[in-house]
Image (tube, rainbow, N blue to C red; front, side):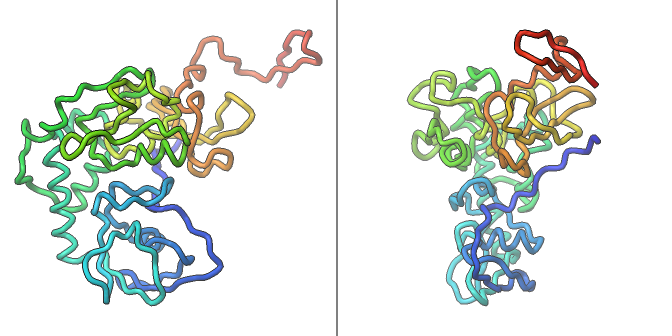
Length: 317
């Protein structure tokens, strides 16, 4: 049965296992979570969303975007909820006037060095940066907009060397999610952050395109990217999908779960399903990108069987 696109719930940080349970209060609600759980994840368990950009529950917390700041009674400053573990009887506030102003200021800095081409951007409708600008109530940017925005990044050329996805440095917010996904999820260590200050950007190596790097095109970086910096070429050409179907990859016997995201009967992309027991939200290059067989004219659509390797295939019910 086809469903509208339903994005998996992102709890911000990975789940922690512990026999010891911690009780705390978040925005007036009593929450009980395993010891070691982050404040961000504890809030999500209570149905409270904390703004974030660099955090996602498939990789370890990093604490760089500073959007997930919270207030904790008895503690100075505004700690990041993604990297701060819960403590017994902790009292946390995720929404105050001070936090609103801090988050708006952080978003203003992000947008000051980001192209404002949202209407024509391939991630329009599925962009976390766009979402967070709305959540924080950002209405104006004092540090440069329009042609000036993204001026420090726009001198870098778009890398289209990979056959499956593009890399656009002008859209990069240096959240490190792709770098961490490449390290923690895939284990390839193909990406790094090069440069400093305004020159900082994701890099697959010193002055080389993705196809000349150690990248194995697994798509973990694309899945982790919160903007259009790393984007499937199928999304760029076909636009955002409208509905999805849970399915199983047909390449090998591992049985990886995928969401086939489509427009009508046209497959736009295959996204690893986080609930897939075999792959838990990750995949190889074949399952993630090489799904052209789904609509190929030579595709076998009926079950086939043979008694020995020398016998011809016979169709069965």
